[in-house]
Length: 153
Image (tube, rainbow, N blue to C red; front, top):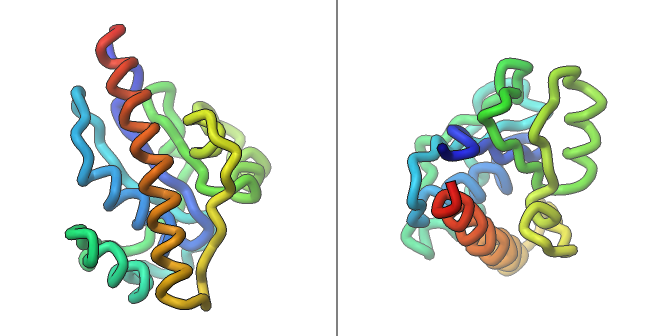
């Protein structure tokens, strides 16, 4: 039996790194069914994805143009949901603000990496591209890990 039914990437505003991770993950091949979403910790209204993030995704054949930011809710925590924060600060905020927080990990640590995903907000398109490349490399490791777990179940 598979371990998780849903994967939720969590970033601060759910307009840049979170939807970028969601889009990249949805473009990958997984052996088992896994619902993939993203959420933010500070979402005041359903904003679209950052334009530079969408441009970088588009250059890789991925689009999140219909994405609208959603806030992380207590109901998102479940034994069958995997919550992956994109930076350490967001992971700590999850544990501080959600009493039911379970299965919460830092994406990089979950896949055995020490790399930190910096927020490129306000940076150049190249900064956004570098962010994409790092997230993509971490997600490639995540896909291997999840597919291996699926084979062992």
